Length: 400
Image 1: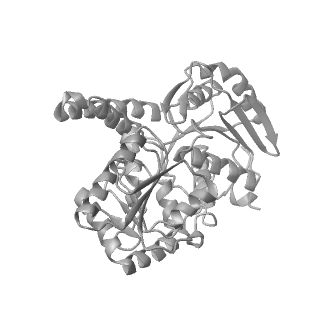
Image 2 (image 1 turned 120 degrees about the vertical axis):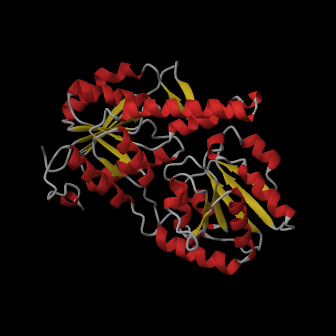
Image 3 (image 1 turned 135 degrees about the vertical axis):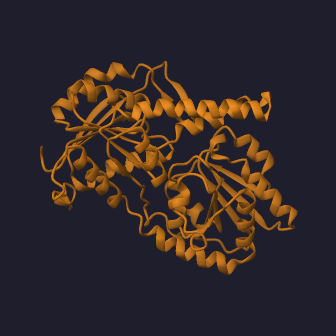
């Protein structure tokens, strides 16, 4: 094996607006910066292969029978028509391992290529699909009543987790975004499970972009507007603040999804911006006074890291991965319940000194999150996968 593993990376999402796609783009950018031999294969607007130094980028255009799995994310049931072309390119590239991000169209293709070419498979866990399945089915079957719909949702969640466990056992090494999921994956597979966190661009997401001079308390949310994100909880926050006669607040909701219309009708003093990227998104973060993330299903929370780097205190639920990013009482709060969540937002609105102190602490912590350090650890996991010497650091050897 070469000193730097020759990796073929096949993410299920790349150009879309979500955390997995953002991480995938950052990984490709990391390989380009470091000039590491790297093959990035994903779906895109055209089918093409582009060579850029040691970086090979393959794109496959999804076909007419693709169907949506989520907002702006499709699944092509006939993605195996690209297998011959992808296999030839992986052979030409000399891929030593394949890394996929889940059981989507590119993930199943990558799993097949790993088996066919007899090279190791690495799978990273990014989305708790079993929880999404349960939440969405429960919402869809709401007309059956809360008890029955919840029972059926729980059943769907458990069966989906069994299927995911079977899929992740195909991997020689598994990557998971938080310690709870590391432990969960270890119940599925005897293979090594490594922690793969996320990074943040601290030069883009910074409190230096704050331009506001008014006193309105701005409550921010960024992410998909879908049931599994628990975004209807934003209406409860607004109603509680209004009942407490605290009316000088504004919600800034960034994103899109099936809950858009409901949020517009039910969240008081709300501005829904749609999807934002780059500097407009960074400006939204910097001008928030608190970032609220009521999701109970997120495995990490890229948006939480971005808000921290922007110098914004965070309030999150006790379930899911975002709680590992928040030091409660220092950079924000990990609420103990829904009622406590609302109370924490209210306390920050009433105590601007605490809000400012937590914002400064959030920025300090956000600056410790680096994409380079994340991917260096991924390469350490690849080294484990390929059974090379721990003394070799393949990424450090090619640093610019």
